[in-house]
Amino acid sequence: MPDDTPNGSAAVPEVDFDELSAAPESGAAPAAGVRGAPAPRTDAPEPDEVEVDLPSVLAQRDEYLALAKRVQADFENFRKRTLKQQQEVAASGAARLVESLLPVLDACDNAIIHGASDVAPIYKSLFETLTKAGLEVVPTDGVPFDPNVHEAVLHEPGDGGEPHIVDVLRTGYLWQGKVLRAAMVKVKD
Image (tube, rainbow, N blue to C red; front, side, top):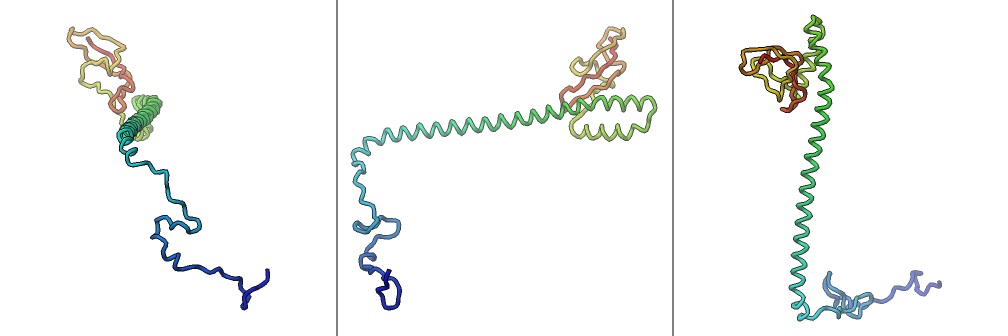
């Protein structure tokens, strides 16, 4: 392309600055006649149409608002239910783990009863750790027989009063207030 200007630069088109200064403020549509400006909108509804349609728009708005509130309530219920299920699953898993450790406690307890004092520190450490997590021993000393937490495997005749525990054959445990394993006991009726 040949150079038409004396200094070798391309020709710059002339701009009518008076026309540009008459352009509207930013955010408003450019004036008609300016290249690239949209044409004024002519499809706007008439004011009478808007007033006639207003009740149906308000009803539709109320319907969508009610739907949004229902969905929000459903989601909140779902969130609470899921959180509760997660807590129950975690508690159940912990209870199964503790239940699988009960034979270890029994073995340590029996070893100590038969004179193996070397096992006592291990038993104590394991029992204290499980106690901190929620393990409790089912009470058997000086309490009446309770079929909810005691399992009577031997009976001894008594004076006919309220049955009470005479001997503990296997320790029972509660996990966070619920019976994990009933205490196996000898009862005197």
